[in-house]
Length: 438
Image (cartoon, rainbow, N blue to C red):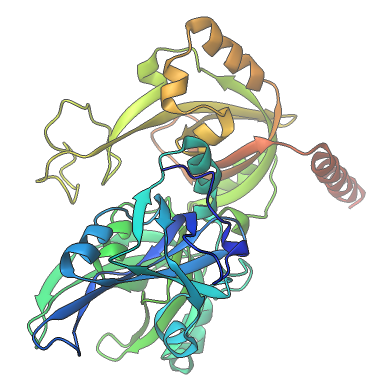
């Protein structure tokens, strides 16, 4: 379906007839059912999700209907996919329900889906998808407005039953546990352990399938989460504070705008030597190695959609013994998987991992478009980027497997603004001057 006729979330108004909205899904609840008050013995089903189409605007969408319609909707998309919502009803928020049960949004309205008139499709337009994908890394709250895990532990029981924002990294991901409630409903639970520079381990509980599915795709010790509106509780059994995801919570994976520290290449390497934990930083540097014209198998790789383990498409199941979906039919994703060197006047950080979708955004090519280029065009594309100065958001991890001792992962990469670079270099010179004076 054409996304060019879609209305921006910021422009929505109840007067629109047959509106169409495109956005990236940033939150989604499980399907729930309730007895239909008008039809005895019949259940009504509901599903809610939240979509975003720009850095500042996002909106809640709720559907009501039969089992087939709502579960059909739920199976159409997951968090992180781009969808088109066709012919919803644009209506004012219900303050009581919205505040209690749904994420707090910037739109004045909400979208209601009806079984008779509304549809939800995956967006197929690559330009639209490329525009929307980076939004998944922008927190929905001010990225400076969060509690550290140390703050939570220090405040203790005074934070019990409060809803706050948390910024922390993923330490480990437990196995999902399944149970049946007293009213015979099926339930599930998964516990992640978070950490930051103040606390080495802190429990985060996930109770719904959608969040558990998202959690199982995260890479421990490589993933940072900005968790907006997470519920904080005191667990009397374990005698500690815990966090729990609820229907208001929106999780941002590897939030780019929470990274503000700027490093030279030598500073990155020195900090990695001094600090055994993963950390994040910005670098204004040149791409000094980018092997786009290597064999395709070194540029594009196929991975398990669940655990990101490298596989071949002809395999029947994932070979990773720890993959949660190992016993299921193999579902794969194919994307750019490049190793890039970044250099500045102080040195080089080698073999930084640049993968899709970040690579696609930087190169301006989809996988399909890139594979259709001939060798000469691929080499020309490489030279378009070599020795250009970029603003690079990096995650740096200690690595015993690499000779350099550190591993870099590119979270975002775009051409550097000359004014920003000048400001950064002036700051560095002042820093060096003051050190020399001291």
